[in-house]
Image (tube, rainbow, N blue to C red; front, side, top):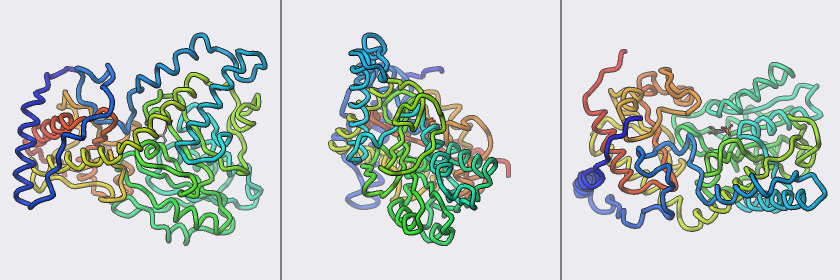
Length: 434
Ligand SMILES: Cc1ncc(COP(=O)(O)O)c(C=O)c1O
């Protein structure tokens, strides 16, 4: 990628000027003091001298503390956690520690409720296929409810059940902000419903779903509740108790651990058939010798996330996100339209459509900012996002959507630079083909 030197001072000054002018126009209380919004820890090497990274929902850099904790388990700590000798014991202890750290972040009492997996997609498959295949209702008209803006891992798991096991599937629509109406779940649910799977927060828009209300409806009808919390864990306080869920998906590479590791919270007593059968690891819920180093990484990432949340990271990100939004609106008056829920939204996620600026064109010309037009799964394709389409958005508006997602090392200067560059690229009005 070609790197353009960043003119931080210039961008900041211009951005500050725009915000001050807009603040003066709108009255007091709109301008935000940015000085206390610097990242809590030093930038990792990967982000130094690199384009500004504004794609934390696609993946996060590995936190240097996570990497440091993992390395011994790729060398001296090589034991198989199922072995009875001291090498095995050390590996087993490391897994127990990681499970406790993940459980603590999720407000789960029992570390044995955490099943380690090889990805978020696998955790989703285990939750959905595993719960339905273990149900006594599997052969007597089992029914599953999900919703339209789920990650493909969830939609594929319910398709698998429909195609191979004749499971009836209801996909609940969302409103124009991407929210599911709990009443719609209440209308669709029957005594045959085995599972309701609704994501906690959407990866493209950040819209947060009313999970506790939906879980209450599911339980009233004897169904299990799964939520894919890939995007919310670490960004918001997530409590399995408050959400009232039976199954919850965690993804390492969205929370500063490496790619290729995830976890599924499984409430005590939840019946689950493994998706990978074999040696009985993970208390018979997921076969395969555990990836100790990656589990340790996920555990430390969970610890760091808990510390960051306690230090006010959600609020820091929310203020940076809102500042970015203000700057874009100030530079492109009347052309910036928020996609997603204005309030029930991840604090780090800003998805906006800019009138008459096609997202892929803007992104291709943004050499010093890394952002995306939607999920990384269909990045680069010139078709409107399924998530935005499900929200009833026109093709034109969906093709103009930029997903800007901030994270641990986003600084006020980064936000000013992102706004400045996007405004510059979007300025020459480009008419979309109608
Ligand atoms: C909401 C959501 N669920 C699941 C996943 C899948 O996680 P993984 O990439 O680890 O399979 C992602 C990753 O993009 C996601 O955003």
